[in-house]
Length: 137
Image 1 (cartoon, rainbow, N blue to C red):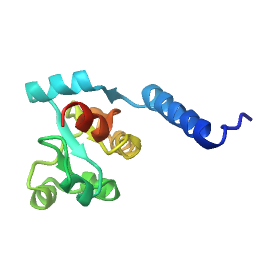
Image 2 (spheres, rainbow, N blue to C red):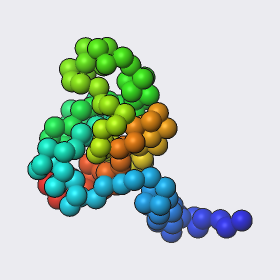
Image 3 (tube, rainbow, N blue to C red):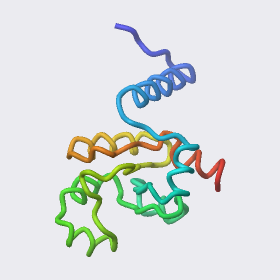
Image 4 (cartoon, rainbow, N blue to C red):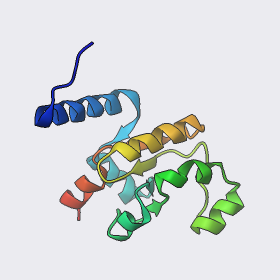
């Protein structure tokens, strides 16, 4: 079994391994495509960071559902979802249901969860809010 290096080299190794797993295992969206989807109104963004993180800044138009609440939210009846989040619940067949967090890990987890619940169009914005803030913010 291969062991990851320790220290900074280990952190870089794990980051690369995570990125490769994300790209290979789950559908992702990159910044240029996200810009296009947002401009055309074809993206539904869900910010899975904490309420405090989202309150400090988010991608315009994103709905904040912390990852700790996501499964419950996606299993809700549409009326209960609308009452709690003041918007329509995503449909299983929605395309471009895009999850993001600060750096990518929680967005990846959210995408896996949503796809496991049958949301076929669930995707992860791999650059996450950190990239958005750096390039768009």
